[in-house]
Image (cartoon, rainbow, N blue to C red; front, top):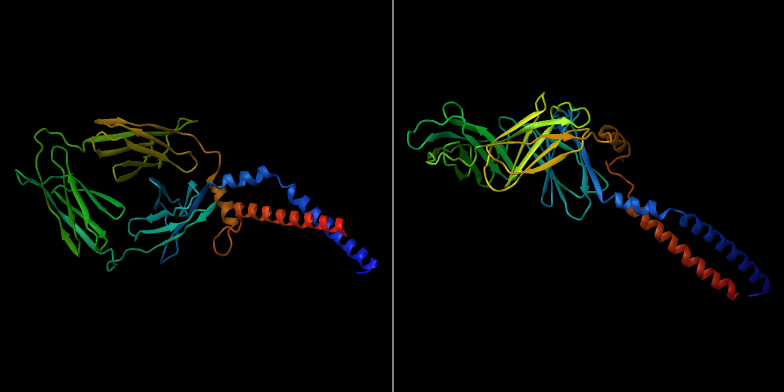
Length: 362
């Protein structure tokens, strides 16, 4: 290689090194704290979506949304536009179970991996007269084992899959559960009433299944399901009652929900009187949720004073919706962004070092 060729080669090498140095300088000025904060912000994500009618595509308000992960269960109700949102969901390797249910519709659940913002929509099928596989009925009568008289207002609980349903017997002691799935699993049906020993039966259903109960009077007149949890939910700033707040009661493997009335009051009846602590939570759009662990006695008062949330869920949802792509996904991921920056900086750093060594030797 002659001298002029070496000069030209060295000239271009220097220009290339200058370009590499500029790029390296640009990327090195990205605040590391911002990147780290972006990743730490991704340690908790959001699950949001809309629930619609599969036939009409209309939104379904007040559908019960249930989120399950680890040993936690969270519930929300869809708003008037069929939208729901779970915030503070941990971003980890496990799949989260999200389900949607509404009276008159077939329930659905989906297993999802959570990112910073995860969209999970549901399209529920209305239950028809010939609907499969939710076409079974469980019905029967509850009587006193000694007098054979019907027992009105007995609490009937039906459990299957991850669903808990309740009914009360009528004045003649009859009860009915409709839209029960026709599947191979055994359904747990139980009957309880103050002053009687509770009973449960495991049944296989098909068509119309009759399950009768004959309850033994409790000699001690002590019933494990004779407690009440009640209270009021108010705004912590104004002191005004909060109507239609979602109240969730959890104990054993049971999850029960109620809505506060126009005065912000709620009541759970037939709560078991046992040694375990009951989890009572209150949530409402626009407020920070709260929960309390309580030991119950005959009547237990549990009041909540909810703090208005600083973030407006409605605006957050609008911002989220505007950033969706055609597949309903968020294309940006801060962790991938960090990896890309580190990779690019590393490549340019290596090229710069090699180039400097090359020029010095030339």
